[in-house]
Image 1 (cartoon, rainbow, N blue to C red):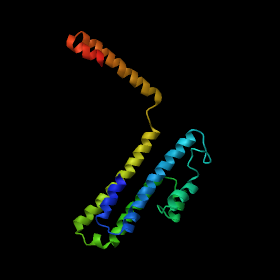
Image 2: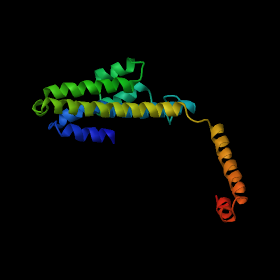
Image 3: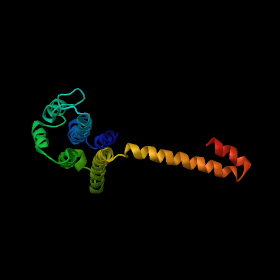
Image 4: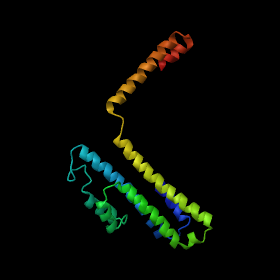
Length: 184
């Protein structure tokens, strides 16, 4: 949804579809890479390697098939991403921001705007890009540090015990409340 919102924002100034695509393709690639990494981690957790049924495959093959052939990234960018050992989503976010600035400087409709509007346009585009990056990063961090299964059941039992204790305490306070307390 954030990418669609950004695309609509870019279309308000960039009349050329190619300029809009050049600005958002890195963000779409970041989203695809995020899902690739999640699927690969899940498959490896279950003991499947790159050749397994649940594994999306080796990074190089997947990047060429799913990103380069669909024009989300260029072959040179794919080789840079392959060698990059950090978070690929962060690198793609930086490329997207660079693309916003480069295409804005070359676009006649953007240059015809008043300077405060130019600034506002870029600020909104950068904010949407950063929001997407933050969303993907926080989702990954939540997945990596989830609530352990045992603690989930302990908290569930504590809440049930608290509700039971509360209902019995209400029995002695007022008779009209006691029926509602037993229902909860």
